[in-house]
Length: 309
Image (cartoon, rainbow, N blue to C red; front, side, top):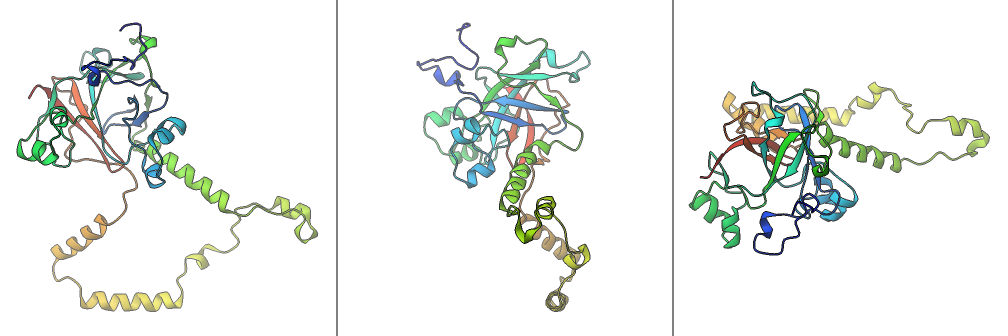
């Protein structure tokens, strides 16, 4: 077993689920836990990391998204990662070191959360083998074991890790407030590419002045900003009518006004991953030194675990 490459065990017996294989390149998820100062790169086993939100809309496969295209953004559904802290990634005072970190896969461990899971959480490994439903596992019996699709990894310092076991790029520092920059960068770059491809290319020699046609930039603003944002008369009439309708049906109390605002915000599209308020603080290291990370395009949260349960 020691001579086999990392993540690849090639087991065929009943212990095979405890030793996932990851022989192909790609399948890397990049994310920044809330309150953490570094962006982590986690390599998933083959066919275990769901596609990103953009590839989900385009009906792309996991191999096309994660392997061939190499997308590392958050998946469209929640990914569960159980991270154990190695002694090399913390100082004697109990703080995280300011140095590159790496993540390696480890075997399955019987950890459980300290609070009940939501009913939408996938079933545990035992209920998965017996083909139980989420209602049976999470609602009726209140199982706190981790979902069957959880990936177990070990976080350690790069300088104290064997280079032959490193399978993903080391972590990189992230400035405060830019935790979701990598998540949005791929989408923004793809949008800019689509906008540029939609623009018509300038034709040379049109109008007899070749130099003028070639020197004209593609994105040139010819109209003033005021005229572009100034509403039309029809818009003014429509806005006045809406104001009159709202004046008649205006809520009588501040509670109703707050309810209207909440309903509007709930219908808005989520652009970036938000921090789950129910999550724990990653800097308050628990005695188990193991926490569960839930990563998706909607939110990201950290939950400290306990052994057994």
